[in-house]
Length: 103
Length: 211
Image 1 (cartoon, rainbow over the protein chains, first blue to last red):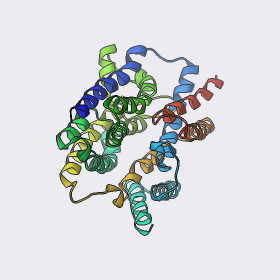
Image 2 (image 1 turned 30 degrees about the horizontal axis):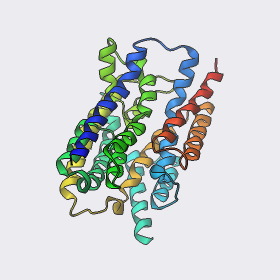
Image 3 (image 1 turned 180 degrees about the vertical axis):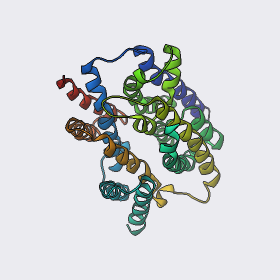
């Protein structure tokens, strides 16, 4: 119980510091063309990594294809067909739940 | 605020993910601590990771480290959004607290530009959704023993995929996305959780080729 509170306090402080670091370091400086080129690609690189790691259940150190992977794959089809966001995520949840129930 | 409208469906997703955190965390740390953690840490993946380490019998130090590693990507995101924030350094550091994955993505306007209103609006929607979702999960824990039975764990990656699709505006964005995903997946078996996604930011270095 006490251990959990230590984790909560420590993580709260660390998270604030991590989020503050970039703005504190850069301030309002305009980025140069080359730096901007790198920053422009951070969002696609990080989002692709988050999607891939979560879709393959890799948070705990190993990759596996499971019901969640099927749900995300269904979302991929929906995205390609330009289905609205809410429908897409509802579809992902429904497919994952169905595959899990069948498996 | 433009971010609020864009983030409304996200708020629904965040509520359900928060609920699954509440269900997962209550047996590990207790109901009050679970809700307090969502209210003051407000970082989904780090919270899940820290709770998982504690549930496996890990030490508080190990749980803290896991959470910090997972949040390290906010350093890269903070650098990216910094020029779009306003005011002096302290004010910017405060506005930078609005950085979470979904807000970062909603605020992205391509070419490294970010919309400050969308960033903050996105977080204004997600914060109450996350905390109330956790509260609902803590309260409903006895009814919904496994949120995965409802496929709730597929919501976030599906949401990230939708946001990713909007980022793929140029050839180099597609290459960075493929490289980032490949880098992260390759590191999963050998690196501690959190490092693979953080390392994916190295894929953005291909942007140095331009200009």
